[in-house]
Length: 150
Ligand SMILES: [Zn+2]
Ligand SMILES: [Zn+2]
Image 1 (tube, protein in one colour):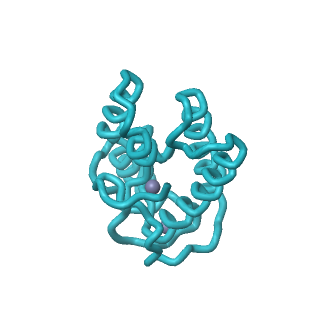
Image 2 (cartoon, helix red, strand yellow):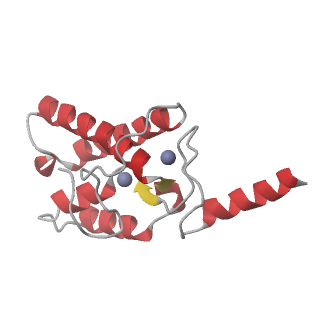
């Protein structure tokens, strides 16, 4: 009986656009307010591609603002910081390989990097890792248009 109730509760979480009740990271025992995390770090692309005004850019902005359930996961602040540290490393490596900043990427390069970030999230989320400093100021505030990691 309890199991059924849990399932119903989880189903609600996946369709809810409001904050979920628990962090997606495996083994996390944190209970409290959660951050909304975009799997492909859409906010960064929205910001660095702001100079673009093409159809694909408008599509990206629209998609970001929709906060679709499939694009988002909920994380505690510490784990949100941890995944963004991983994202930072991936972005740095990707830029070094491309020989340019993300800002100068074409759409094909951008999509490849987005896919790489998303994949890294799924590899990370299912294993237990240390929680990073919850007060990390490297964290972007998603859903709010504030500071950003570039
Ligand atoms: Zn995030
Ligand atoms: Zn957590």
